[in-house]
Length: 396
Image (cartoon, rainbow, N blue to C red; front, top):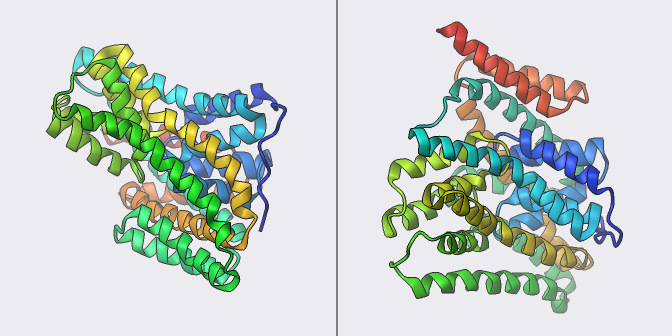
């Protein structure tokens, strides 16, 4: 098992960090699974900043804590490459392009009360991102899931995720399964201390915004401060996919506080899905609708701020977690199940992307290009958008 290196004391090439994450934040369409696939290509195969095992461990660590997983992996990579300045730079550059795009769409939405048409481009983009994720999963599984216990956990996590078993249950259950096997063999109870410290820290951070909400009850105005604190709560406690985010927003903002209408909520989620970068920039859209530019900034900072805190704390513990058989087994289970969850997401993406023979052919051609050539996946996404637009024009 690899031992994860600590973040460097001397910041690396901050300009390189900024440029690569600005590009990823501007071109990473398709949600967390695609973001992680593009990071595997960029940081493991092209730049060799990480090994496959190190990336899998970072993915597992991101799944252990609340917040947007792919953004947390980006922050981890920045911390390792450029220390604390690199951590903030990587996260900000990955988030900023999507936040600006979403804020601009929110401005147009408020002005004209409708979303721009993007369905034709998405028709060609969706099959391409399916191919990108498939290639990344194959690469990671072949390098990281090398033992039968890990393979067993991956398959079980995949199957149960397809049947909609809770993602958090699968992540922690897999970790406890492989960690428990090591505990049975070695019985070193003290080794679990770093894991307990990490989970305790998560609980403490989450208590702060939850306490704010409990003191306010149902009487909550839409001030920038309240928007910030609400999305800080979400960033502190939210595990799972964008669909979990939707359930929170539906319960709180539509039903309880009536900040949004049902139609506005679905438009906000749609914008988060079809723009590049983190899906959690849905918060930027909602913040703008509620309080203009101040609300957009407050919501964006609120929902992403906990990710930086979790990464700063978790990175210090990762080496310790890998240093004992017990917690290393836990991390193995978490990493393997994280890949299983991404594979399950791939099935859902495929069912949405493959609507006819053309979309299947686009996916197969993209996969063939990725396997044969070292091409940047952003070019394939751009090509997919062109194909989608042209196909729509021909159909008319």
